[in-house]
Image (tube, rainbow, N blue to C red; front, side, top):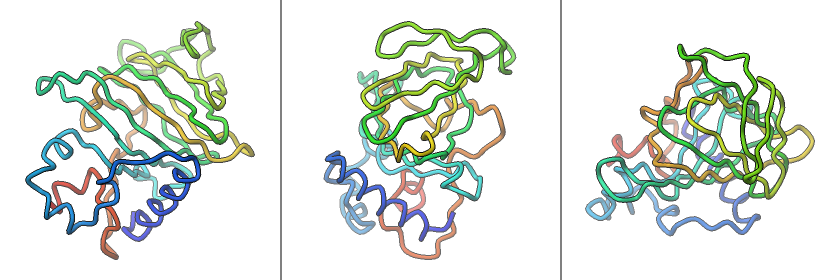
Length: 224
């Protein structure tokens, strides 16, 4: 991805979140110079990968296969007492987050407003392939059963709970608008707890064609 594209995605995200009256932490608006000036105070943020996170899964087409995320809070196994994490995400119509599961993390994916979120689920086999068995899941605490790959519509205000070893892909339903999606989960580690069914890249390779508007979580090691 080009940095100019990343910057524009961030501008669009700021506008969308503001329209939904979803406010980010004060440091979400910091420039690179602000981060450098406060480097001694932000170790916790950096170590737990809080902040802006944009990926195209190395697809080369963010709007077709990509995801905007902002990690608001996160614990770190073995380092602190916080056992949970929270993210806000933006999912466009037909913008796919590809099939994946988590070995360690159980999560609730919440439609916070906007359009409908489409979720497809598969159980994983012992060798981490797609199983053909029905998938048991919950919508707002109510147990349901889906056939493998069945389209599950998560409407505004609803949430779906995904357990470990359950493959899931999601995207915004066509014609319904962009979706503001929340995630509440156990501690999140995007460096080691994503098992993608297809080989994809979790963090983008960025062509630095302009200065970063905001630092991504993948930028911390590079710039700080």
